[in-house]
Length: 329
Image (cartoon, rainbow, N blue to C red):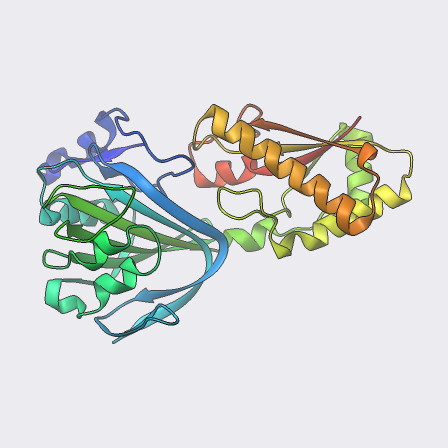
């Protein structure tokens, strides 16, 4: 984790890399798009989906439909991709202006292009509701619009387009059962949508390739099995890969397999150990339930972050580390 701190531009780059990680983030939460956070801030809540639709505000929020939880904007961009939404709590002291300017400088440093920005009344009456009614933060964002600032930006690198929405407020009112910020304390909501990476990952390994990998390498890594964010719930787009595993097992009736879950390093050793075990168990349960595979032929295991195949310092590396492997028993 890296941090931001307000300093003159000439000193900014040094400061961005000089401060140690001081925050205690909520389990499973991480920074996105390589963006550094404001110094001392913590990710207090987060959520996400491996594939989701998202309306990126590029103008004031003029209306809001409470049934669909969708805003009506002067201008917007409809996106699809991997969505991660973080809520940061900044230590008392800095203003929303200071925090916002630091994020703007960080966006420029990381090669993002600003698509729209505004503050307070420029954002429309409903902008706080847009963020408060969907994603982390709730009423804390919805009822704290007096010092609100917002920026939308995008960047394309290595075949992945990243779109960002950053909403910064000073807490004024609103209830959240898990958070009790002080009056005037800054909250930052970042919504990141990554498009392009999912297409690369959805390569289905065939039954023949599973057989070849087990014979030649003693294991095969699967990147076509998808779970809900920070959960062990299988997503529908996992079906083609599960079909191929079942096809392999049917053609090799005597084969027994270890099904091993792997994670990236975000969230710590023990939570990732449990998550990887639960995900492996979910794969086994689905193969038994939907394909009639005998339970004795499959043994789930989880090793968490302890067997990486790439660096965890980049999103591309973390994506390679999030996988399910098959090994012969």
